[in-house]
Amino acid sequence: MPTNKHALIRYRVIDRSLRNIDRQWNWSTLAAACAEEIQKTTNEKVTLSERTIKGDISSMRTDEALGYYAPIEYDRKEKSYYYSDRNYSITEAPLNKSDSNELKSVLSMLRQFTGFRHLEGIENIIHKLELLVYESRGEEKQIVQIEQASNVPGQQWLDTLYKAIQEETALSLRYKAFNKEAVSYVISPYLLKEYKNRWFLYAQNHDKSALRTYGLERIQGLRASLQNYRVPKDFNPEAYFKDIIGVTLDPKKKPVRVELEIYGNTVNYFKTQKLHHSQILIEEGKKKSLFAFTLIPNYELESIILSYGEDVRVVKPVSLKNKIAKRVATMRG
Image (cartoon, rainbow, N blue to C red; front, side, top):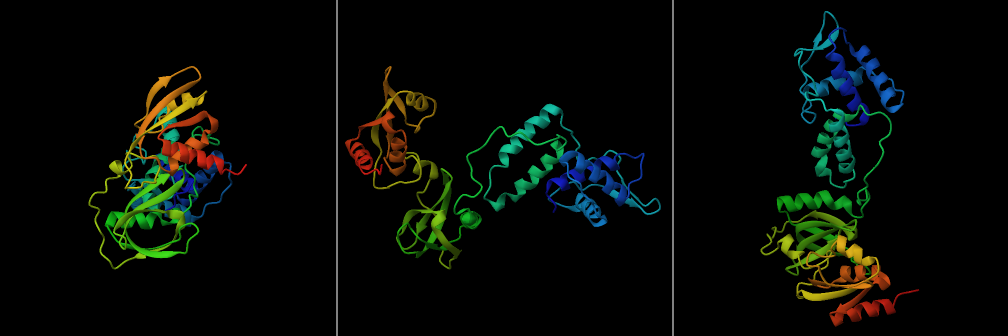
């Protein structure tokens, strides 16, 4: 199904033309009207063939993904197309200018999410919505940019893993951890999680009978396994991630009280965006403030602390304080 911007414009022009009963519309006059509108809208000159226009009419009539089911008929005597239902329009409820602007803003944000081919159904919905608002002339001014890269490493595995989780299918995984040889495992995949523009898979490793985390960019191959899928017994994503920041969890560790001394303007960042849902403000001063958290220290927490440099100091626990000091001491200047 054509889903590019030109196709959207053509559908709209054909619809508008067929609602104009004062003219007769054959493929040639429809092609001319579409080409004129495309040039006006996109500044591009195009020549449209009979095959293109007739293909558009066929799609408008029968394409399930478009869902128009337009009652387009052909009068052989007059050699022209028309709507058998004079009240029909592919845009039965036209948007006012305010609605159109709101919708364009939402579409702009939606278009920044990529990676899953299983979202093609949503793509079709987006195309239909764009059809309602395409009249706006000129280039869109980007106002919002979401932190979602279009080439996230490992995203080529997303659809295979999504389908396996949905259908509860075991997979044979070939995986190469950093600085190690590639190894093959049989896994039962449970959850896909994105963190800081990287994708991670949570799955049970059949050989180890334990939950493991795999970075998608380190996956070298995936194929269906003959082994039975192992349904998770106690894996609840909300509970699993409740006591950590990021993706790394040592199941043997328990949450502890972490206290951080925050200096300067960094205090405002902690006030306006909590580092963790357990965050509380213990003491507030002019030069520094003390925040407390109840969580399991992990690599992601350490990285965040280090990212603030001299503006954050670990007070408790001593084990975390020593680990940060050791990492600072080994930094390459």
